[in-house]
Length: 416
Image 1 (tube, rainbow, N blue to C red):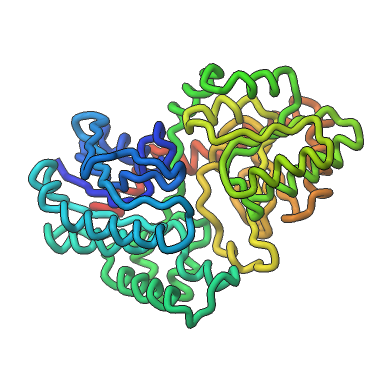
Image 2: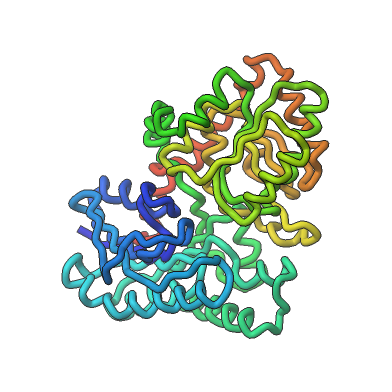
């Protein structure tokens, strides 16, 4: 039996609200007879609470799959020194515990280090050299490029130089590189000079069966949400309450629709710094058909979006069009496309998968009138026509993002 280590700081089981990418891959790999060990932080980046309040916590999914949560330092804001300290702490402790993990759960034949933050690559590389395993670098966000093109930092900023050095260091040493952005190869191979033979696109996986099962569980939703969406035309949003996620664009679109008398409701579930601002906007503009809710369990999201007519997404840093030119890696867009609803996506680059799949429509970022127009158009469509978006979206996800299809690619990268 071949053993795979996946070192991913922000991964967790869905019940903890973290990123489920590795959970989905691990379960499918386990079903295929691989032994998978996922090493993650015991401090949840999304809820700022501890999954593990002891140095190491092990969660066994089945005999072939184990989550190992390592306790790291805490922080209460996602930017700043606290988070940086947490990243360093994770890297150091993975290196500290790697021998213990190997004795208890097996030496790895392949080690995947997963960014968002690149220090996970350092820990993975150290483990791969220690145990003579294949080193695979997975990248889901192009740090530090995104800092520079978004205007957050200059090219000469010490953090930019530091992370760029690590990035180039890791990519030179990696046996294989996995990227999950639609056009990520244009950056890796075109700008950084990574050989095309080393770079593999593996997008965000969907466990379609688990999603379908959770769709049947409206009881997972809070009563207030169930009552709010009952017998209504619903536009839903699930994610971060941030300006670049378009939450104010959506509320402004609702204001336009309410002025026209359209009985459209918008429900928001998530967390983020704009929550109070959104609630204030609703109050100041006397909106009657908006509900802003806290984050709900990941298992509950399918029950909401499968009962929606439209799912809304938006991604652009205003004034910085270059930020997402290579595509994005957003699991929620896959879930939207698979939900059966029509996906409306505010994204500048029209070759995105939403448009390519036929599962939705694009609207101009930061253009509330365009979003309102698209919602009104979908609202007035015959139901049979509207449902075609959901049918095409589901077909596309099963063909291109189902966990079974992407695990075939993953095993080729790890052992091919």
